[in-house]
Image (cartoon, rainbow, N blue to C red; front, side, top):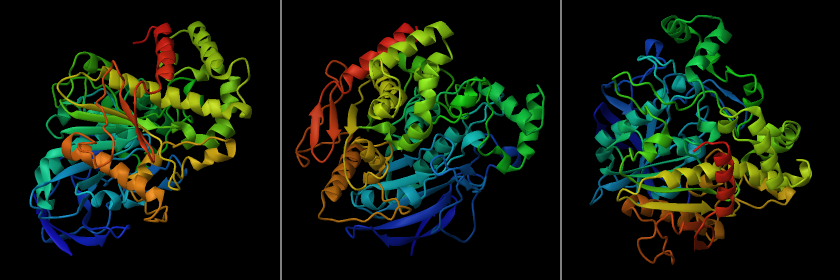
Length: 534
């Protein structure tokens, strides 16, 4: 057992062996970082954590947020009392404070948690960093927006800020350096990380950021008419009103399970899109109205970036080689048929919401011809569909974010993750269709040990080499702001520069390159220009 003192009281954790046997680490789970957001605190920004007396056991995770898992479709009751984080440290009293990495989980802002089921810390612990994983409020609980001072939106992102503030105040007790914090996250967690780079609330709380496979420009991370959606939710649950205060009191008193996996569509087209994980989730980050209070973000990310209003932090950003393999069975069973039947589905949701039907159909024809020629979209072209889906759902938007990042004396590194190993459990579905690649989420299998999957580990394998190599790149960036500070990995990863488009392909071999997916980016840039969108 191990004890540390934080501002709220005394914690007792445990000393564990890493799954590789290469190191031991201290584990402190289920630490509350904010007051439970219950009753009249539902939907609102988090309050500071409450103190406790005596010794608090920290050997079990706190409850996850109530949710329906977007991958398994299982309902998880969880609890609204879900604002907990976990701290893992290889050394509570190091000679010099250790760099800190704070991970934000993905799941479409609708599901997930920071627990060891998916995010076991074992591999990173052997690289002398401290890891913090975080739960935050999801779906309506975390992202309801009523455009009022009380519920302006983004409560889930403000939860993450509260966690970062807790880290700033307390991580020294675990051997961490409060002035050397790296925020990283994947998918929705990547989009959240990319937003922390822009948010005035997050300023000064971290030095570096690693958005993985997600940015706020992605269709699925873009909110539409959030205030109207809140009133539709109320109507679906039994209250028809135009009074925001009446709506708030009603929604604060409905049983929490009624707020899980809701479907408050505001357009008839959303009835089809709402089950399309590539295009939309009902609740996510919003641009808040400025009520003169502390806010997460009050201007469009595009505007903030073009105006240079971002936090001065180093950024390492990228995506996997075949992102959309993640949903292959869903693509096969549902999307191929609906995209062939309704060609406008090929057009990004951002364009569908802004352009008239004539322009949408012209763009749809252009996209179809580019990826499928004159052939129909069917199972014969599943490989091209995965390529199309990866380009439109992730790749173009991530490149746009990188291009708009102001060059303000900070470093930018770009990567493509292409490791093929027996840990690519999400991408292996592609093999039966002749698609070899690294899926969305497969990169995380080389940074974390997901206890739920009970994956075997052969320390003499090429897989283990890729795990160690990936962890070294990520932790080097966290430590030094440079993923290849010396010749240990046998390669120099050049900083991204718009003229060269330098990046690193992270596979069994590390390969520097330039102009990552340039043809795809050029094509989609033309589509957005034709739609008169920036």
